[in-house]
Length: 211
Image (cartoon, rainbow, N blue to C red; front, side, top):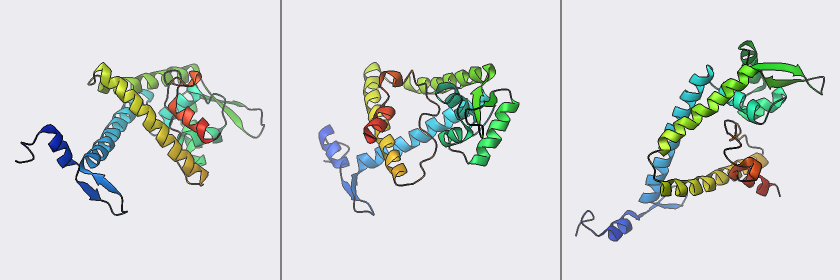
């Protein structure tokens, strides 16, 4: 009897032929398929989100993240705090803020520390930040329409678990002095993820890591 004509359970068993990787770990063809598909999905979704938010903001690169971060949780921050959040070098952050100031989206205001300035959004900047978040939500929402309610509930549980896992990985790398890039939540709607109510998986993972 061929694999194609085998009963469903036998076909699933046939797919689970173990493959040894270079580091000695083993994986099945199902796991290899999932790894490839998940990576492609992440890349495709990232491409669509980036294109959408950059078009909405009228700026590329880190500008959309800077606007949303300043709107959501970084209002009045220093240049150094902003650059760490969005993953820029000091000179890159200065150039970005110069552009956002020139566009009328950001203002530099006196800070408590006389050696630095506080970065705050203007009314126009807040408006664009809200539109950027909406554009991101539309891209993801359109994709999720392919799923049923039961599938959405299941995906929500899995996504929470995976986000907590990647947060823990990044914090572990940071503890070792390794660069981890920009913050995961730099484009997030903190109310939507439930952070004020303790429901954000990334925030929960970070709290557990440091306690």
